[in-house]
Every structure is written in C-alpha cells, then in structure tokens.
Length: 613
Image (cartoon, rainbow, N blue to C red; front, side):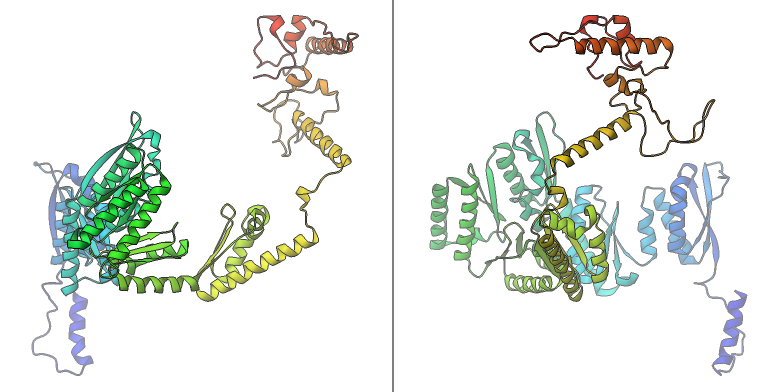
C-alpha cells in the first residue's frame, strides 16, 4: 500500500501535471485488502481441501483470494472450523460463496470457472445419458458462436475463444441455446428392448438401419451383457426417434427380420394431400406386395422389415426413388463418395451446424458411398459437401496394395514400421499401411501428401525391381534333400541342447558350496545319464528314463537295469517281425521316474515311454 501511494505521488511529475493541493492517500475501497472468515462443519474440511489440495488450490488460483484452513482443525463449541480468507472484497466474496456451496455438495469447478469469466448455466440433470446428449446437441452452438462448452455434474461451463469473458448479445444467445438443450434433455425418453440372444444383438449399436437416428437426433444406444437368454438394449433419445429405434430393434432382434430405413423431414410424407397422396399410398401397397415386406411410415423415418435381406434392400432403394419423384425439390442423393471422405463429412463442423436445423436431414453411408439430403437447406448442404470433397482430394491419397508382402515391405523389416516412420519424417504427412486391408493411406497438407505418395510409389518400384532379380523369396524356395537333412539335424541338436539345460542366455553366478564361476555345466556324458531338463513342459526322464533326483549308486544301478531291460526288449523280436517285450521289475521302473511324476498302483497299467501329464 505504501508503494502504491508513492507511485500515485510520482505519476503527476512524470506527466508534467501540477500536483494537487492535497497529497494522494492511495486508498481505493475496491482494491483494499481485507480479511474475512467462513465457518464450516468439521466433517466438511476434506471437501474444501480436496484430494492432495486440488480443490482449495483451484479456488485460490481462480479467485485470487488466499484461503487458509487451520492444520489443527480448531473446533468451537458448535463443531465448526474457521477458514480465513485474505483478499479484496470481490475475491473474498467469490471464495466464500464457493466454500459454502461446496459443503452443500456443489462443484468447485463451477465456481472457479465463474471467477475466471466463464458462463455457468445450471442444469441439474443428474443423469449421464442426458448430460451426454446435451454435450452432443451443443456442438453446433460451439461452432456457431466460437465457444467451448464443458459439461459438469450440475452445470454447463461455457468458455469464449482465448479465455475471454462472454458478454453482451453473444452471452444471451449462448445461454438461450444451452437452456433450450437442457429442456430437451429433460424430455428425453428411455426405452428397453429385450433382444433375443439367438439374433446376435451385440452389434445393435452399429446397425445400419438405426445409425441415421444416432447421427441426426443423437439417440444413445447401450447394449449390456445378456440376462437370462435376453439382452436388454437401452435406448435414450427424443420421443419419436427413440420409439422408431425401438421398433426397428424389436423387428430385427426380437422377431428376427431384416430392416432398412429412410429418413425424411419430419412430417414431409404425411403433408401430401389429394391425388398425390392417393397415388403414393397405391405405390407403397404395390411395393409391399412385390417385395413381400412391411413398410412403416413414421413422423421422421420410413422403415422396411422383411424376411429376405435382398428384398428389404431393394424396397428401401425403391422408397428413396419414390421420394425423389414426388418431392424433387426436397430430397437429393449424392453418390460415388469415397468411404474415407464420408468420415470427413461426418466430422465436419459446418455439416454438424447445418444438421442441427430441424428441417435439415443428412444421412451419410460409408458402405454405399452416398449422402441422402432432405429439407429446404438442400442446396447449402450440397455446396458444403463439394467443398469438403475438394479438400479431401487434395489432402488425402490412398491406394490398394497388391499383396501382404507389399504392405510388410513398406512397413519395414518384419513389419517393424521403420521404413514407414522414415517416410513420414521425410514427407511431413501422416501415413498408414494396413496389411490386413492391403491399404496405403497418406493424409496431410497438399505438398506433404504429394511427397508421401512419391515415397510410397518409389518403395513399391524398388520392390518390383527386387522381385525381377529374385522372383522367389528365400523362405519360399524348395530345399534340396541334403539341406532338409542338415536342417533336421540342426533342430535335433538344438532340442538336445535344451534338454541339457543349456539356454541361450548365461546363468547367474552360482552360489553355495562347490560353485565355480558363471555359466551352466557342460555335459560330455551319455544322453541317458543327463539330468532332467528344467523345462516344465517336458522332462528328460520321460524320454531317457533317467531320474531327476540326486544321482547315487542305487539310482545309477536302477537306471542301468532299466536301460538293459529296454535293450533286451528291443532286441527280442518274433519271426513275423513283431517285437516281444520283456517285463522290467516294478522297483526299477519306480526308481526311474522323476520325483514329481506320481506313481501308479498297478504295475501292468504303467507305460514308461508315455510323457508325464
């Protein structure tokens, strides 16, 4: 405060203005620092502080007020703790209001946003589905007014671009749009369809017949786990679209029929009158009779159900042709759109803004490669589609690869992605290579896409040159008989190496009596005398009949007896070429087992050569 008074006294001299007769006191009521207190219940101290102090630190940063909670929690006779506030009048007021609301269950982020200049609009929906629908509905508002909307537990927080406060006419329009969306969210309906599990309702969220309702009206679909042979599919959305979605699911996943849908401007077909309406109804009856389907005409959608998937698809296309004939200025279909361009259209903010108008219907189909448009804004939608497609042609390029080997060649050695990463760094474009779909995709700015395209084509050209020199890869070349024998010997030697307990990695340093140096033992003994392998999958005792336990004279004698018995059995053959096996004593057979192999009670049922487990 003293420094402030000094500056006030020096400023007039800097501007060559005569000093006032009375010296400046330097006191301004609005900026004067003051100290206030707020009493809160002892059990609410944790709510004010938050986990690791995140709540109180957020309030201090947003309000600029210093907030102190006593460490020892001094409690008065009424069980209250005194929290100290230090700041200007406005800062203390904002901090006090926030603390009082937090102990009642309020959200600290709402008060912090209000202190930082955001527009805070209470909604109190207390329902995740309705909050998600409001967030979806306000995407167009964000684009129209250049704002950002965050959805909290109890309120919407609207931020202007650059963090500036929202004031004036813009604030009124944004508040009106947000309040209208909240009212619509409160009127949403929730429906349950008990789908039969035999009809595979797992993919109901991606059913092509209901996706237009999801994109156009924000219908939310949840497919939980089966319950007693049925799957209760949950549908949340505006009344008429949600009921149309439920009817489609009932026909598809309860009755087992195939379905197709065509969106219309709400009430467009029902507005026909006179001879036009009569001709249309006759055409619908003829269609149902020809394709053996059932057509349902709702307020916002016409949908078809039948027992044959091809008949349903043809009936759906016929209905679209009929609408184009009866309403040539209302309906339009744009065909031959690249599937990847459909995703660009779906994520375009201007398209979302146009679709938010209740009289504008846009259905994007990536499999069909089409855009179905209805409503008086048809021409604006068409122009926007052409703009997006033109940008798509400049900033996107993709090609179909010949085979799996070409995809792996572009990725790099063993599909590591090294070559792809180098091409991305050199071109500056975003590049994707999919071995499963055999696609190479390049996206980015026009120059970067051109450079990425050149690198991919050069890489494929080098692959063709390599194939011309060596048409058959080494892995596909036929081995000679000698090479096959050598390969088999190498595999057998590696197997024996594994049984001896000699891995490719060195063992840790041995500890204990008798240990010498590092590494594993090198056995120069007969394979029958090798110890059991450390592998838990197969044991040496199962192959050679050696004991896995400590090797002593008795065990060695038993092993020798077993080997002699087996040699005698192998040497004894009958005149007709069949082997006659000699019985080995049960004691010797029992001692030849590994310790972890359980013995059998009947000697006649035992088989020494059968692997354990």
